[in-house]
Length: 342
Image (cartoon, rainbow, N blue to C red):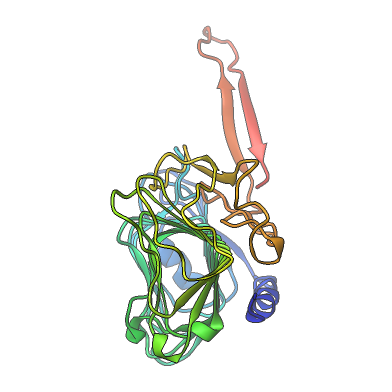
């Protein structure tokens, strides 16, 4: 059964960014004509609620610290030619109402709020390099949080000291390692794809079960895969090991060791250019989730749509699809441009 926190949290977070004061552009490319060339300088000078558009670049924007409400929008996390790369992010006290989207993170997001609770945090449409994680290390909690549409390794750790978040929705992500939850009664995990033996840990399993819904566990392992952990139950999930078997998922209405029939996914490693995790006609995951939802990241019960490249909804992208190969002196270059509204 869906948790009632899902609807209330979504309604809250759809309205938190409507009062932004200023749009600021950031580009660290040589000769760029942007408001700022350095992202940390742009953050320092920004007012509460400002939106920072961070252009794609061959160079990373380095480590940043955020201690105020801001929206930071990158161009893409996996476009073949244009990525916005940031190394480590530190969220400190007063970093409520922060949104991070369209970014390739080469290192962790560390949340170190020691004095005040951080609320209304959205981490969406991002890619995390292998070994890069989301940590919650501050003494204060994080509450009212959405993590969705990301390709990431790990959320929290198997320790209450680094997993201090509650009232959260973790949905429509590709998980490459594990999700760790302490406040299991107040965290919704649904419509994710877990690759390469990824799993979910209930850090406080002595106090009750953590429920995982409408998710796919897909691995290519020569060993029998066991996604079960103490205090974790699965509802309307699907598991598959294309090289060996899978231990049945504990819980109800699960589909065990059955090919989900993705449109295209040859193995359990994410490839933005090659993989398509939409479901083919005849997939056992179509319409067999909770309340008739599809199982996996393309939920029919959500308006959010997963994007392989991390393009943020509402931000147009422009692609040159054709260009004149040879031009005589004084001649004209003909260029065909395609624009997508995302």
